[in-house]
Length: 142
Image 1 (cartoon, one colour):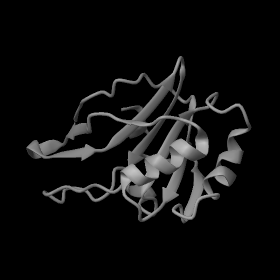
Image 2: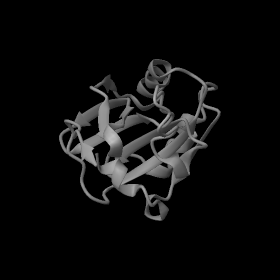
Image 3: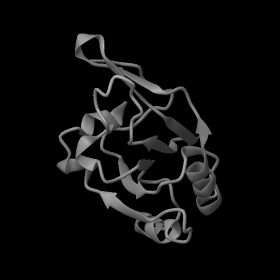
Image 4: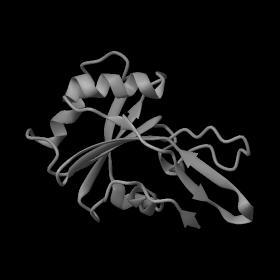
């Protein structure tokens, strides 16, 4: 599998992931997160992953980095014309978005992020994902 790397460096096993359920568009979720978490997510080039048989998937990604701290929003639902795969991480198909952040990103305890996300009605559900139980964990290092 050929992978186009994102411009942000990710540090092995030094991040957490929150799955988000929302029927809102990506730009609206980013706006909500920017306001709730006092960040500035910006759209990057999509992550292009080439699969076997010359098929590929494209994952939308928004990033914010401050020194060695980072946060990024990944779209879990894929809009592939080829219908190769419907979700970026299939095991997390119940989540529409994945919010990945370095463990030192927030000044408050990271488990409080769920309470912050619940403050907006556009987010129907949010919960931490146990990344260690995912077969596709490597996809989060892209």
